[in-house]
Length: 104
Length: 214
Image 1 (cartoon, rainbow over the protein chains, first blue to last red):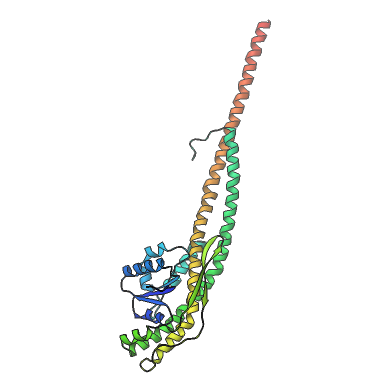
Image 2 (cartoon, rainbow over the protein chains, first blue to last red):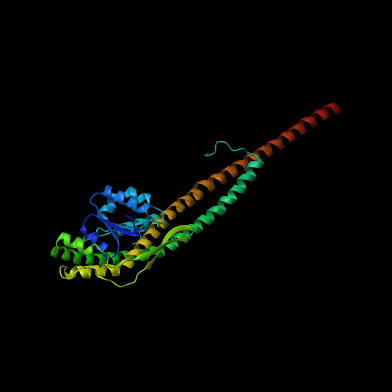
């Protein structure tokens, strides 16, 4: 990994490979532990955005907790045909945290 | 009472009064900060939500197409086709400050042109469509990342501030007011007992003088 990776995508199946075609560095990883390691490395290289597939995203809460500052941005994306709604759930949690109740 | 040792002296009283003033001013400031952050947050979260719904729907379509392509190709073929990026997106990152909280701000340099880098002979058209659609979606995905992080950071900060505001409003200020009340009461008590002592002494002295006089 010599070149600077600014956007990366991590997923547990081939679907994330699609991101490779649009200039995003892609990792296909099976285990959450591997994902955590890769995120750590990417963060050290000052990677800006890391897209993580929803299933992996749910498995790595500690890592997400660690990167709370502005960068890197780690966000979930659906990689199956049906979204699990992880992203929307996160939005709802944020609203609840900020104003105390859910308005959506 | 919550306070075990408070010296009922005038020194302490004036110190507490000054402290209470400062605390109230701090409370007002924090509350204003919280209100402003909530306002900003509401503006961002709405956009965030809409963008997420939009992006997920769009992604779903792309993934469906890609699944179609996957069925028609070998795994190795897919790997080969997607190995070389069709375009390079470069983004510039800065940190914006909302109420002194650092939030990300990304700037996308997107040349817009897409060059499919694989041979068309051995790839199904679904793959092309999926890639073209995804590259069109990319700016939205980047904006989404920016918004989501902003919301995350803001929500955390709002929660923290709210806790602080509540602690000041419901614990610190009542506590201080109670202390001040206690000191004033104690001082008044002392004052009264002093007056009574004086009156009593005067009475005794007067009685003595009267007795000697006769």
